[in-house]
Amino acid sequence: MSETRQFETAPEDEGSRLDKYLAAVMPELSRSRLQQLIDDGLVTIGLRSVKPSRRLKAGETVVVVCPDPVPLEVPAVAMPLDIIHEDEDILIINKPKGMVVHPAAGHTDDTLVNGILHHCGDALSGINGVKRPGIVHRIDKDTTGTLIICKNDRAHQIIAEQLKDHSITRRYRGIVRGCLKEACGTVDKPLARDKKDRKKIAVDPEGRRAVTHYRVVQHLKGCDDCEFTLETGRTHQIRVHMASLGHPLLGDSVYGPKTKSDKLQGQTLHAMTIGFRHPGTGSYVEYSADLPDYYKDLLRKLGGKL
Image (cartoon, rainbow, N blue to C red; front, side):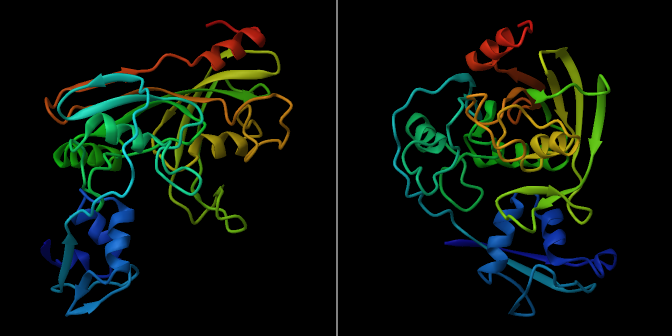
């Protein structure tokens, strides 16, 4: 079974790219899901499949076929989850360092998805084309802290819309190398895939706008303990932005020094607080995760306060 939707382009849509048009008229779907539908030939104009860069004309009919979510062929695995909050719509997890969010090569049964499949069973959203993933956003493997899991498609759509319009509050704590010249500031630099290394992100004038606000919480020995507030949420945003200032995150061997002398497992970054309009009540809520033990130990070692 599948759902077919049709959209008539308006005069103001003349010249717009197809992918950007679809993102506007179908905000409930992620950009990656829309890209997948286009690649699979499920988006047509005049019975012909089209490319994402196709420029639209006024009065055209865009047809989108959305197949039902396919079963997720990932095992449900019992594992301890640090649950900050749970209700019928959402689950807020405090993700530990070293845990991968989605199954991938080398991680097929030890990811967060494996754990939430066991915890939630069938009560997870399937809006991105795979039945029961529940994931509406993610954080890096070695970043700790708050993560939203959606337990139904309605909740997923509402949270996804807030992510798209940047109305979700996301505050992080992180320790950067060196001492920043300013106690607070804003980094407004566009980001895109690194043209030389597709696994990395780089500052790129042709990339998507990315804005990070920072303030120094306390000065440490050769480092600064900082709070970051995201205005946008691009991949590796804080890590790349701070590295671009000459102050990469402590332990980040991808965007900082390649040394392992600090004996840290990846970047020192913690998704401390997340705030959003609750999909069930409509009220604004915030959830926070305490600093992980490794971060507290590091603060003590570097002469900081908890």
